[in-house]
Image (cartoon, rainbow, N blue to C red; front, side):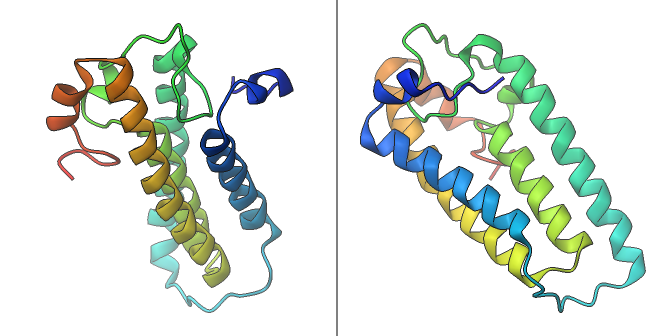
Length: 159
């Protein structure tokens, strides 16, 4: 479970807190859902959108369980963290972000919401920069991270 205790936030730097606050702000904005529809999806595209959403949930749950005690919402790893490169992390460096992207993109398409698609796009951009910063931190903490990074995709395998 992601724990955002106030004392944990005090021990993080401004960049860590900014990324987490921006991320959760976008999550909240996504669910405000103003009436900006207009993606007139064919009915047959609703099923792939739903499958993308469900797949994203599965990816998130599996990734969280695999990361276990290393899990943190912040880009800077915990002091006690160990580099985990098994499971989904064998193919993707940031599978939780991948799962969230799949969930939000699937919901945006399913509900045919231009507004939610715009928020999802902003979230992808945020995750790109947050993951780049996170990777700097991981490279500083784990000497083997650079090698791991060279053969795994950031959000999707081989990308």
